[in-house]
Image 1 (cartoon, one colour):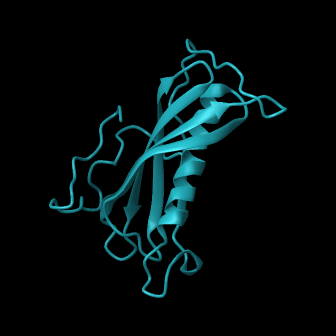
Image 2 (cartoon, rainbow, N blue to C red; image 1 turned 60 degrees about the vertical axis):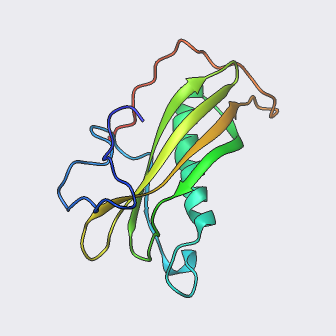
Image 3 (tube, rainbow, N blue to C red; image 1 turned 180 degrees about the vertical axis):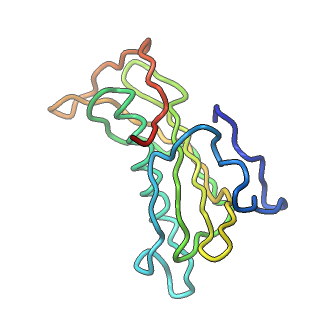
Length: 154
């Protein structure tokens, strides 16, 4: 992802509260809390729920880039690095990295802020593909030359 991320693998410690933001200078496309209904009896959030949040975040970036309706057509890659727990603040960062005639590839990183420690950790990353569609659900062209700035909170 452009804009820089914290280099962190399973063997590296989580960033401390107040450390560099996961994606410097960027606001998340989506931010929500993991709730009890999103978890199994052990308190671990379901991977499918995380994937759904990532799909929504990727759609935000794709809709802005396509300037209209999009549909998810593929999840090319998905990696779960760490568990998400009930009460974690989940933030998904999305960036359009390739634009085709009607399709867009979006790289998505998911980070959490742990409820009790406020430590931030990268928990998931994935590559999603969206297609711009018209009002009848048919693929439509995306202006490959358009430059859409990163999302910012108002």
